[in-house]
Image: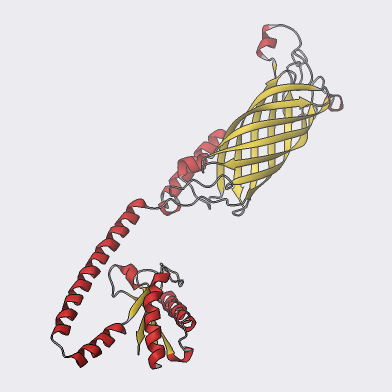
Length: 378
């Protein structure tokens, strides 16, 4: 079974390497994220340290050796590949002292702490939509045989297979093997032969089927692309520097023009400068204003429009590099209406505001500057 699983994992690695978009580095989540609970029905076979010389059939399928039970667990994934769970198994077992299953019956529980290794995520990369996750684990804990009032320590190794049903729910197929102190099944070791010394532990083989339910946030966030952010920031700085240079040149031109004009012409020019169109910017794909500071310039235009009872044109834009044409058309209209709503709050009559949706454009550089709405006196 382990050999087949190994080949399957290798096949998954090959298939998923062809779709690298599904794999990415993840950021560490908060402590309260990625918790889960599990509930399973289990079938367990038991072998005791006292069986030497009894000549009993070792098959785990024999009724005198196996019994049904259940398990519950609470756990957390600290990374996509590493997790911990606390698990309780029980409650109907066998103390194998004969081939009579009624005589062998006992009641017990085992509480263990287990370390989980999601090999699928470790080898193939994290993929929140993966159907099958291959999760070996090891653990240690304490058991109590309630029928014989005995306690014993033990260790466990196993393989948890999880089959995704949704982001919250998965089906479990859990296979495990446990080695326990000889008090586990209530009987001490019999005899003092070399064979007895080598077989002085009680052993269990466990097969469980059940469900996992993910509590709270169950996904892992993609880590930011730091290089891309740096490049974007540098592009924005370069663009702002270019705009500043353009503004300085325009300022020099206006000063020169004002110095050579008559007083009446100067007043006219100043009024024209005051009512020049202003821009309000938005984040990618959003219709909520990115910075309320942009509304300060809008407020000045609103005051002029109210004084003159002038009409205002609000034109919405989106950048053509992201989204379809129909999406950008709708988005540009939403952005224009957002600014219109702000103008109404400033006291501008709604009947004096005209909304235009320009859709996706590529007129400004960098492209992010096209994610805006302009406000102008008509």
